Image (tube, rainbow, N blue to C red; front, side, top):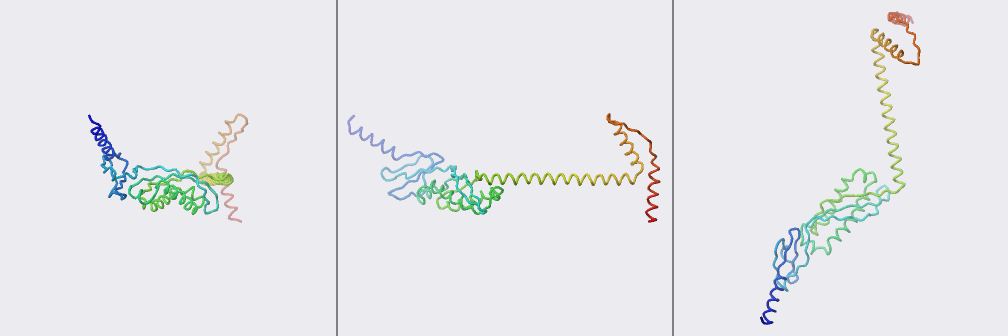
Length: 257
């Protein structure tokens, strides 16, 4: 075999390797031809390139990217200094825009998320940050999604991960929580005493209207006293009719007065 045939065979192999690319399902290839972008991203599967004419400018992943935002210094609306970090979930929906319209879409999205994280959280008070986190997450997601649409990026969600409170603010919140627990305990105790007083009043009204019930209650009290081993009880029968006499006497005196 002559050297010319070997060189020709090697050249054919080089040209084939340069003209054939295999793109995975989760990626898209951006191909430039004579410096101009192709009509659409290439892939997935086997794509064919014209050697020395077509050039793969970038291979873009279309999977969801999880990006951690570094802790940012935030001053809330009520002038409390915090450190807040978040997580942004996004994916490339237009690979051509992510290459042509922005130099580095990952870095650009990171900087945009940091900026809007500080500005949006600064519009809320500390209580709102702690109690309305879902609402703030949706607000951040909407703002970032609108700003990254030109880059071909869809922001799936934004999650505020951790809010680092100053020590003095943590102590103040602990005192507030303790005061709230004491208030609830006092309210519950007062409600219990009110219910007990109402039930005692109802029992007294019932006993005053039924002499038999009053006598049974008297006997039950004597029985409870007799069960104690540390006391001596002298049981003296007390005719219930005397209560009726006392009641009639009291009613006559009341009318006389």
